[in-house]
Image 1 (cartoon, rainbow, N blue to C red):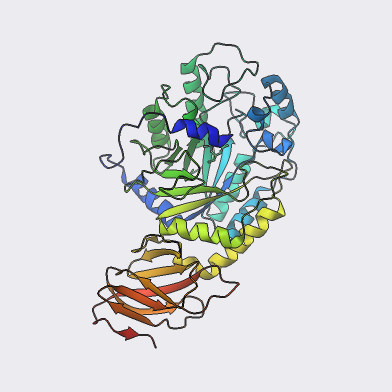
Image 2 (image 1 turned 90 degrees about the horizontal axis):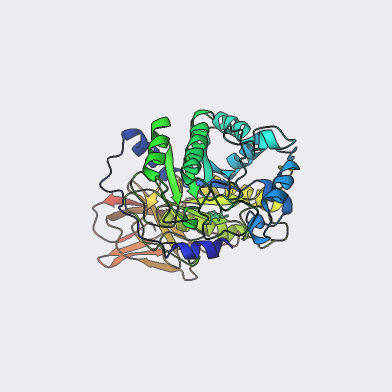
Length: 441
Ligand code: FHN
């Protein structure tokens, strides 16, 4: 369903301008650099919908009326939610930030808000604010917390006129759009003043009404005024606009569009991010067992980094607040992989060779990391790396990797692939000015 909504979006008008001309204050520039260094984040889709075990679009897909969904919300009681356990998992996985749904399209606020009683503290028997608990645990662990915030709302009466995903769900055929915008801004102000330092706001759903008067300038201005280092991450699938800090892609690497709704435009001015489901669902889906393998997930992380992008990898916790073993096992394996190979990911930028079918390259300073994901031959020919090669070695075991450098490029003599190694990382130290020759034997 999300695909269909997004597909329509691409037909929307092109946004006004990119970021190049923006004058961005130093705190935000520093936050953007931090973001680019972070490389790996954990996405969490969790809400009332989790109870039905059919993804976060279940209200829409099953055409559940507002009154029935409101009743469903009164039963939400995730007593096993343990923020410390979630953050411990995130730490083991090696993520640097968490982005959690504060409010999804169902319009239910997963935090205490004075703007509506339709929130987890005032509406449910749970009565706790999980975002507060998560924020405290994140701050204690040094993990940044971002809030996903849906601009689309299937519940609020003032989300009017309705957008592309509308159905007759019992709301009156009237509403006050300016009230709705004020409501959103008031909630955002709460999120930015009550939860300590926030990494940023991850917007989604604008594609439901791309041409509505969203008044983004005032909303973005509010965010940056309240927290000058908070980043605005808009999932509108368009070119970045002024005031936006990250270009995020959904279920696709930057520039790719297998999902059908991403833009092929890739910004050179702002950090990049790719969000990805671990199975095929964002919210908890009890029958979706189509989980990606660890090898595939490492491949996404590497290819994202090779594109200069972060990977925001999703989990859909269960309605009781626990995270199922399919997710935790994969996150633990990714963490183990990053323990050994993180130097080739964290703090890097896109390398000198754009991602290819065999793998990708990343770079930090004079060091180029060649990530060999899928290459059966013993020799890997690369184009010139932009600087002379001083030495090359395999990250695992530090064994020397022979290379031949000519004007046409560099050929690496690869160590054999092993089944337990999804990525043969070759560290290539450049910067020397020696004549091309054989090295490392
Ligand atoms: O409709 C949502 C969907 O439920 C999910 O939140 C994803 C995450 O990137 N974004 C939307 C579709 O673009």
